[in-house]
Image 1 (cartoon, rainbow, N blue to C red):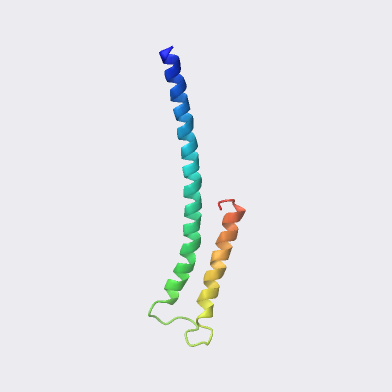
Image 2 (tube, rainbow, N blue to C red; image 1 turned 90 degrees about the vertical axis):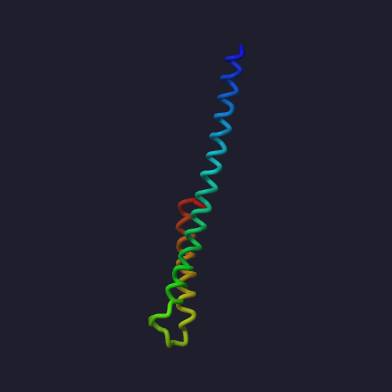
Length: 87
């Protein structure tokens, strides 16, 4: 009888461990996708923030070009992750 209860308890603990692992995988996938979406605009801004000659540096729209590129990349990646149901 002790062996039967030990097996039941072991199976129950394995089921709980599986559920916790599945929830952890979901959270990690969501956090990874959010990190990717936030990293791409930072990459664009850091490229335009370097002290080198960049295209359109003397244009009156030189601030709006990297901001627009950053917003577009964030929206495209968000749309892609929503399409794959990662959000």
